[in-house]
Image 1 (cartoon, rainbow, N blue to C red):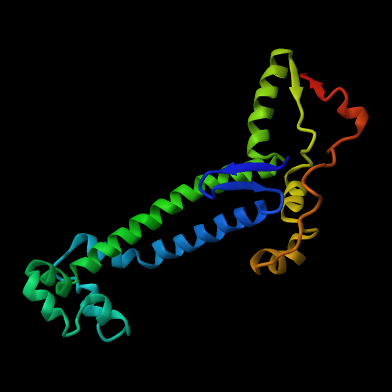
Image 2: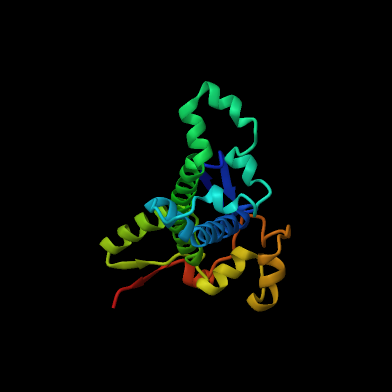
Length: 213
């Protein structure tokens, strides 16, 4: 079965949603890259807290329609000043927004690093025609075959190019890349997820090994 349990989603990523899961990782990673790259100068300014740096609230007061609401420039801030003097000063000076900018940058950067590992690991098993479960099974089987001086061959590995075409459910990268990958689509993947074709014929499958030279 083509299933991979993922605790983060509280469900199994299988034949019918593996493609959506992987593309979601790609697009989320690109979005976080955009956030990190786009706010790098703003982050550096607020991280250093130099005297010549204009706070975000002051710089965006007349440029963004929601800046006054976010920075609490409205007159209702006076009621908070009476009860919480220190909190009021921090809100007016933009300290809270400064902290939010730092948190946003670090969270986006952490997601970039974490997703990069996840994208690489899934990309590797997809290129080899495996699932995460089959990866460990094939790894253990390959070690057993190596002890017998034989090489284990994955019977479902058609080569990285055909494996990716099968995974994405496309026939031509150039023709289908935009309409089936970039644009959200709901087409069904190839096969039923229960039975899979072998990469080589039955005569080659029975030995299933090649002696090392």
